[in-house]
Length: 234
Image (cartoon, rainbow, N blue to C red; front, side):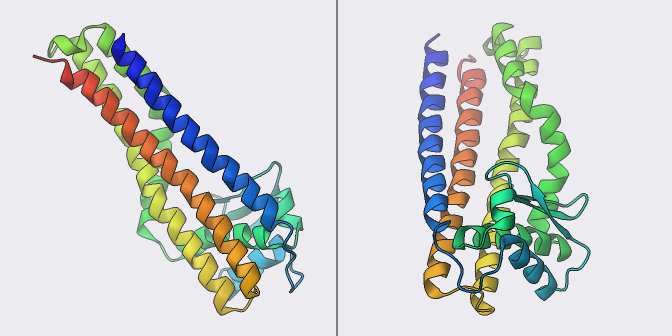
C-alpha cells in the first residue's frame, strides 16, 4: 500500500499546484476585466475583426454559458466565447477572444499540432476514463509477477494513459501558438494600448500555465504507474 500512498502524495501535490495556478488565473482575469479598452470593442467585435483580418469568413462567433468556458470548435467552425468575454470591453476579454481566434487561424492554416490534437480527441475521450482502472486492475491481478494476464491488462492501461499524456503535451504548442498569434495581432493592428497589451499578455500567460501543470501532472502520473508495473518485476 506504500505505492498507493506515494500516488496520493503525488496527486495531492499536483492538485495543489493546479489549484494555485487556477486561482492566480481567476484573479488575473478579475484584475484585467477592470482595464476598459480604449477602442470600446467587445470580445465579440474583437473576435470578428481578427477573423476578418486573417481572411476567415466561414467561422461564427457565438456566446456560450459559464465562466472561462471559451473555446474554438473545429467541427462546426465556431469561436465560443463565455458570456462575459462576448459582451465586455476590457483587456481580459480582448485577450481571450483573440486567443480563441488564434485557434481558428491555426485551423485555417492547417497548423500541424492542432491537427494532431484533433485526431487524438476521439481516442482520448474513450481511453482516459478507464486507463487508471486498467492499471490498478492489472496490479491486483498480479502484473508485477511477470507476463500474465494482469501484466498485459496493466500495460494496456499504461498505453491508454500514454495517449492522454501525449494529448496534454501536444496541447502546449497549440495553446502557446494561439496566444502568440493573438498578442501579435493585438499589437500589430494597434487594437490595444501598451497598458491594455500588458494585461492581455499577463492573462494569457497564466492561462497557458494551467495547460503546463496539466501536462506535467499527466506525465508524472504515467511515470508513477509505469514504475509500479515494471519496477516490481523480477
